[in-house]
Length: 110
Length: 117
Image (tube, one colour):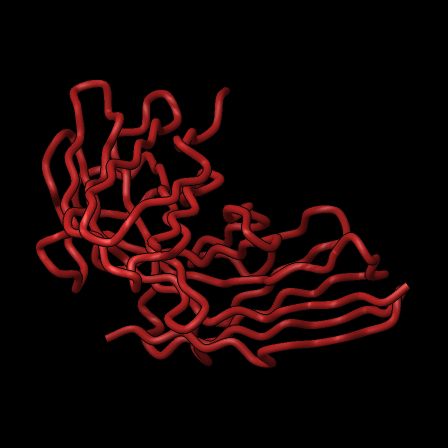
Protein backbone atom coordinates (compact mmCIF):
# COMPACT_ATOMS: atom_id res chain seq x y z
CA UNK A 1 0.00 0.00 0.00
CA UNK A 2 1.47 3.33 -1.05
CA UNK A 3 2.05 5.90 1.67
CA UNK A 4 3.20 9.47 1.07
CA UNK A 5 4.83 11.59 3.75
CA UNK A 6 5.79 15.25 3.69
CA UNK A 7 8.29 16.89 5.98
CA UNK A 8 8.16 19.42 7.52
CA UNK A 9 4.47 19.93 8.27
CA UNK A 10 5.01 23.68 8.54
CA UNK A 11 7.79 26.04 7.56
CA UNK A 12 8.29 29.77 8.11
CA UNK A 13 11.04 31.62 6.25
CA UNK A 14 12.00 35.24 5.56
CA UNK A 15 11.40 36.63 2.10
CA UNK A 16 14.19 35.95 -0.39
CA UNK A 17 15.30 32.65 1.12
CA UNK A 18 15.71 29.52 -1.00
CA UNK A 19 13.89 26.53 0.47
CA UNK A 20 13.29 22.82 -0.03
CA UNK A 21 10.12 20.86 0.66
CA UNK A 22 10.37 17.10 1.00
CA UNK A 23 8.09 14.28 -0.11
CA UNK A 24 8.72 10.57 0.42
CA UNK A 25 6.78 7.55 -0.82
CA UNK A 26 6.97 3.91 0.19
CA UNK A 27 6.35 2.15 -3.14
CA UNK A 28 8.92 3.16 -5.76
CA UNK A 29 6.81 1.75 -8.63
CA UNK A 30 5.20 5.09 -9.36
CA UNK A 31 3.94 6.29 -12.72
CA UNK A 32 4.53 9.96 -11.98
CA UNK A 33 4.48 12.43 -9.09
CA UNK A 34 2.59 15.69 -8.98
CA UNK A 35 3.16 18.77 -6.80
CA UNK A 36 0.22 21.00 -5.96
CA UNK A 37 -0.29 24.30 -4.21
CA UNK A 38 -3.38 25.06 -2.13
CA UNK A 39 -4.36 28.47 -0.83
CA UNK A 40 -6.68 28.55 2.21
CA UNK A 41 -10.19 27.41 1.32
CA UNK A 42 -9.32 26.98 -2.34
CA UNK A 43 -8.82 24.11 -4.73
CA UNK A 44 -5.51 22.54 -5.73
CA UNK A 45 -3.31 24.18 -8.35
CA UNK A 46 -0.92 21.87 -10.16
CA UNK A 47 2.66 23.14 -10.04
CA UNK A 48 4.79 20.42 -11.56
CA UNK A 49 4.36 16.88 -12.82
CA UNK A 50 7.37 14.58 -12.99
CA UNK A 51 7.16 11.37 -14.99
CA UNK A 52 8.81 8.29 -13.52
CA UNK A 53 11.49 8.43 -16.25
CA UNK A 54 12.45 12.02 -15.40
CA UNK A 55 14.80 13.30 -12.72
CA UNK A 56 13.75 16.97 -12.71
CA UNK A 57 11.13 19.43 -13.82
CA UNK A 58 11.38 23.20 -13.69
CA UNK A 59 8.84 25.99 -13.88
CA UNK A 60 10.03 29.50 -13.15
CA UNK A 61 11.40 29.63 -9.60
CA UNK A 62 10.25 26.08 -8.89
CA UNK A 63 12.28 22.95 -9.43
CA UNK A 64 11.10 19.47 -8.56
CA UNK A 65 13.35 16.44 -8.45
CA UNK A 66 12.52 12.75 -8.30
CA UNK A 67 14.60 9.86 -7.02
CA UNK A 68 12.50 6.72 -7.38
CA UNK A 69 15.11 4.38 -5.93
CA UNK A 70 15.12 6.24 -2.63
CA UNK A 71 11.41 7.04 -2.73
CA UNK A 72 11.91 10.78 -2.55
CA UNK A 73 10.96 13.97 -4.31
CA UNK A 74 11.91 17.52 -3.42
CA UNK A 75 10.39 20.84 -4.40
CA UNK A 76 12.91 23.65 -4.48
CA UNK A 77 11.61 27.23 -4.35
CA UNK A 78 14.12 29.91 -5.21
CA UNK A 79 14.01 33.48 -3.88
CA UNK A 80 10.79 32.95 -1.92
CA UNK A 81 8.14 35.68 -1.87
CA UNK A 82 5.19 36.35 0.46
CA UNK A 83 2.89 35.27 -2.39
CA UNK A 84 4.39 31.78 -2.14
CA UNK A 85 2.67 31.34 1.23
CA UNK A 86 0.35 28.36 0.86
CA UNK A 87 0.15 24.63 1.56
CA UNK A 88 2.17 22.46 -0.79
CA UNK A 89 1.08 18.88 -1.45
CA UNK A 90 2.71 16.05 -3.32
CA UNK A 91 0.74 13.13 -4.71
CA UNK A 92 1.25 9.91 -6.65
CA UNK A 93 -1.42 8.03 -8.63
CA UNK A 94 -2.30 4.51 -7.58
CA UNK A 95 -5.37 2.38 -8.18
CA UNK A 96 -7.27 5.12 -9.98
CA UNK A 97 -6.77 7.72 -7.30
CA UNK A 98 -4.14 10.12 -6.03
CA UNK A 99 -2.35 9.32 -2.80
CA UNK A 100 -1.51 12.59 -1.06
CA UNK A 101 0.95 13.59 1.59
CA UNK A 102 -0.37 15.67 4.48
CA UNK A 103 1.18 18.80 3.02
CA UNK A 104 3.71 21.42 4.09
CA UNK A 105 2.25 24.75 5.17
CA UNK A 106 4.67 27.45 4.02
CA UNK A 107 4.70 30.98 5.38
CA UNK A 108 7.04 33.54 3.79
CA UNK A 109 7.47 36.65 5.94
CA UNK A 110 8.12 40.05 4.32
CA UNK B 1 -9.31 25.44 -22.56
CA UNK B 2 -11.77 25.81 -19.69
CA UNK B 3 -10.77 24.28 -16.38
CA UNK B 4 -12.71 22.08 -14.00
CA UNK B 5 -15.92 23.75 -12.85
CA UNK B 6 -17.54 22.91 -9.54
CA UNK B 7 -20.90 24.25 -8.43
CA UNK B 8 -22.00 25.57 -6.08
CA UNK B 9 -18.97 27.13 -4.36
CA UNK B 10 -20.63 27.24 -0.95
CA UNK B 11 -23.51 25.35 0.66
CA UNK B 12 -25.08 25.41 4.10
CA UNK B 13 -27.34 22.49 4.94
CA UNK B 14 -29.08 21.16 8.03
CA UNK B 15 -28.42 17.74 9.54
CA UNK B 16 -30.58 15.08 7.93
CA UNK B 17 -30.91 16.88 4.61
CA UNK B 18 -29.33 15.72 1.39
CA UNK B 19 -27.10 17.62 -1.01
CA UNK B 20 -25.94 17.32 -4.61
CA UNK B 21 -22.66 18.75 -5.87
CA UNK B 22 -21.74 19.13 -9.53
CA UNK B 23 -18.47 18.90 -11.43
CA UNK B 24 -17.79 19.62 -15.09
CA UNK B 25 -14.39 18.26 -16.20
CA UNK B 26 -12.03 19.62 -18.79
CA UNK B 27 -13.40 19.04 -22.28
CA UNK B 28 -12.30 15.64 -23.55
CA UNK B 29 -11.51 14.21 -20.10
CA UNK B 30 -13.52 11.12 -19.31
CA UNK B 31 -12.30 10.53 -15.75
CA UNK B 32 -13.71 12.46 -12.83
CA UNK B 33 -12.75 11.75 -9.24
CA UNK B 34 -13.99 13.23 -5.96
CA UNK B 35 -12.12 13.98 -2.74
CA UNK B 36 -13.16 15.17 0.69
CA UNK B 37 -10.82 17.48 2.56
CA UNK B 38 -11.10 18.15 6.27
CA UNK B 39 -8.54 19.69 8.65
CA UNK B 40 -8.24 16.47 10.64
CA UNK B 41 -8.21 13.85 7.87
CA UNK B 42 -6.59 15.67 4.98
CA UNK B 43 -7.57 14.67 1.46
CA UNK B 44 -9.58 11.46 1.25
CA UNK B 45 -10.64 9.75 -1.97
CA UNK B 46 -14.37 9.25 -2.43
CA UNK B 47 -14.77 7.70 -5.88
CA UNK B 48 -13.76 7.86 -9.52
CA UNK B 49 -15.98 7.73 -12.57
CA UNK B 50 -14.83 6.87 -16.08
CA UNK B 51 -17.18 6.84 -19.06
CA UNK B 52 -20.26 6.83 -16.82
CA UNK B 53 -19.04 3.89 -14.69
CA UNK B 54 -17.77 4.00 -11.15
CA UNK B 55 -14.31 2.55 -11.48
CA UNK B 56 -12.89 3.03 -7.98
CA UNK B 57 -14.38 3.74 -4.58
CA UNK B 58 -12.93 4.92 -1.28
CA UNK B 59 -13.94 3.98 2.26
CA UNK B 60 -17.00 6.13 2.73
CA UNK B 61 -20.48 5.05 3.86
CA UNK B 62 -23.25 4.42 1.35
CA UNK B 63 -24.69 7.87 2.08
CA UNK B 64 -22.09 9.14 -0.35
CA UNK B 65 -22.90 8.34 -3.96
CA UNK B 66 -22.19 9.72 -7.38
CA UNK B 67 -22.85 9.40 -11.03
CA UNK B 68 -21.44 10.52 -14.33
CA UNK B 69 -23.36 11.58 -17.40
CA UNK B 70 -22.63 10.94 -21.06
CA UNK B 71 -21.01 14.38 -21.38
CA UNK B 72 -18.62 13.40 -18.52
CA UNK B 73 -20.16 15.84 -16.05
CA UNK B 74 -20.41 14.26 -12.63
CA UNK B 75 -22.59 14.74 -9.59
CA UNK B 76 -21.97 13.70 -6.04
CA UNK B 77 -24.81 13.19 -3.59
CA UNK B 78 -24.71 12.96 0.18
CA UNK B 79 -27.88 11.85 1.93
CA UNK B 80 -28.84 12.19 5.60
CA UNK B 81 -26.16 14.79 6.25
CA UNK B 82 -24.16 14.66 9.47
CA UNK B 83 -22.12 17.42 11.12
CA UNK B 84 -18.97 15.49 10.24
CA UNK B 85 -19.73 15.83 6.53
CA UNK B 86 -18.75 19.50 6.73
CA UNK B 87 -15.74 19.72 4.43
CA UNK B 88 -14.29 21.03 1.21
CA UNK B 89 -15.28 18.68 -1.62
CA UNK B 90 -12.89 18.67 -4.53
CA UNK B 91 -13.35 17.25 -7.98
CA UNK B 92 -10.47 16.29 -10.26
CA UNK B 93 -10.43 15.65 -13.98
CA UNK B 94 -7.90 13.63 -15.96
CA UNK B 95 -7.46 12.11 -19.37
CA UNK B 96 -6.57 8.73 -17.90
CA UNK B 97 -7.25 5.76 -20.11
CA UNK B 98 -8.14 2.24 -19.13
CA UNK B 99 -5.54 0.69 -16.86
CA UNK B 100 -3.02 3.49 -16.56
CA UNK B 101 -2.82 6.92 -15.00
CA UNK B 102 -2.82 10.04 -17.10
CA UNK B 103 0.55 11.18 -18.35
CA UNK B 104 -0.67 14.73 -17.84
CA UNK B 105 -1.74 14.43 -14.23
CA UNK B 106 -4.89 15.68 -12.58
CA UNK B 107 -6.59 19.08 -12.71
CA UNK B 108 -8.69 20.12 -9.76
CA UNK B 109 -11.65 22.43 -9.48
CA UNK B 110 -12.03 25.21 -6.90
CA UNK B 111 -14.12 22.98 -4.64
CA UNK B 112 -17.48 23.18 -2.91
CA UNK B 113 -17.43 24.20 0.74
CA UNK B 114 -20.21 22.31 2.52
CA UNK B 115 -21.23 23.34 6.00
CA UNK B 116 -23.70 21.17 7.91
CA UNK B 117 -25.44 22.83 10.87
